[in-house]
Each structure stands twice: as structure tokens, then as C-alpha cells.
Image (cartoon, rainbow, N blue to C red; front, side):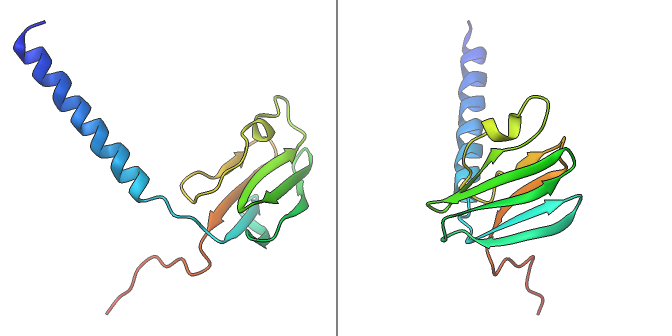
Length: 118
């Protein structure tokens, strides 16, 4: 390796570090879980209340558990059960998307705004 290769590696590592920092700074903890079926809101629940909900999916029922301000899919009917293997999510940057059932689970802040215009 010559000096230019080492400089390039350092620049790439710095850029990756900055991107990771930006992503982590943009993480938002929400207070509401929204569940969509075919782009229609079918459930909105408080994230601070531990509970289990069942929503209708394309291939059958999808069981959703809210526990300790986190949400996960407990049971669902799909060929590979990827959604239920995903585990808990706790921030708004990572939704749970169950494509075979056409169910999307998002964590949002109850006062989410796109922007303010003056």
C-alpha cells in the first residue's frame, strides 16, 4: 500500500464515522405506535402502556406486543416469518414492515410536524 491508499482509507473511515454520528443524532424516541394495513391506519396505541394487539393482515392475524416502550411482532402468518424474527424496535428510524401481510408498524411522536412556515 502506498501513501495515497492510506489517505483514501482514512477519508472513507472519517466519512463513515460522520454518517453514523448523524444517523444516531437523528434517532427519535416516539410515544405512539401506528399500525397500517394497505396504507390505512388501523391501530394507534400509546407506547408507554404494555399491551398486546391483533390486527388483520393479508395472510391472517398479526399479533403485536408493546412492552417497555418497545414494539415487536409476536406472531404472524407468512412464509418465512421474518417480521416476527425481527425483534423489538424502539425508535422512529426503523419501522417494521411485513410485506406478505401488507402491515407496517411505525413509532411516531404524537406531535410530529413536517415543518413550520412563517
